[in-house]
Length: 450
Image 1 (cartoon, rainbow, N blue to C red):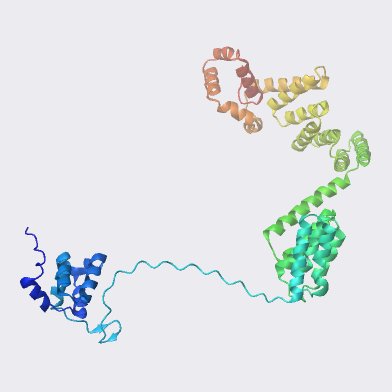
Image 2: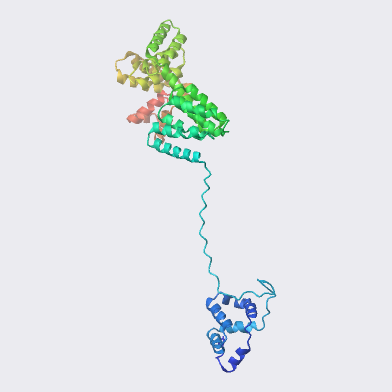
């Protein structure tokens, strides 16, 4: 590929030719719009040379520029045949400005800071705001008396325009535990709610403050009423939760206030009299009241469990036995009655375990021994009867301990081998853990031996 020849040297024939070339800026601009010269315009060196060329009056200097950058000669030659634009950016018939160096990217102007809003407050309002700030500072430093004076002072000279200012002392009164003062301030706010056209949510907050006061005063009925009024103004999730908590606290408080061990003992004695007369429903009713009067007395639950056993309400009796033992784990009478409940519910494996625990506490207790013998006889009878007690099996299958044993892969293999060859039973029973598991399954009626 042949190299393009450079521009002719100055002087001589080339110099004469250069003199005949037009330096009309309009034609040069038109030539630069050609795609061939697109890259030239973006070159600062070329554009600098072009500016010098168009301003040059000296022929020798002109030839020197063309020699230094052959691109200038290319554009100059193209400009001789270029058609000037009909309309420039400055109006009809006005040529465009001569090309200049590409502009550098304009730097973003710094963001102007917004002007602070004009302070249109009156002198009274400014003074009120100063007192409010002072009151807040005093409150944070726990100078409540001074804070109370500071928060109340602005409103003596400036009429209230919202509930915000009038409720400021409420927080101070609450912290001071002056609940009567707090309620009085809240009522003042409610008295002007229509005058200041208070928002519903603001009114709801006033009712919530009143409810908080009544809660601390343990006047739960009034607190519940205030929360209900608040919900009528603004039904929020937080207020609904507070209402439910107030109801729960009221129920607990009422139960605590109802406790009276002396009265409980009177009702227990009446229950015992009805028990002797075999009037078990009346006995249970007296035990119910005794428990409400003294729910921490273990023997009351045991007495009621005995009445429930006579009424054949075994699940309820079992619950009372467990409550009694939760208060006093060594209450043997409750253990005996618990075993009886489990026996009548055909949960023989559980009854056996209950009597075993009782015998650890009182090994010589006749009732525990008789209960244990009764369970063992029933288990043996069930195992040899050849009949399946569906009720017993259903109770057993609901027992998590039985479910765990039956779900153990090792126990499944042992049970399978015992069913295929009874000789394996004697070998398996040598392991204490296996023997205990097999005994539970047999007592539950799941596995039959012999």
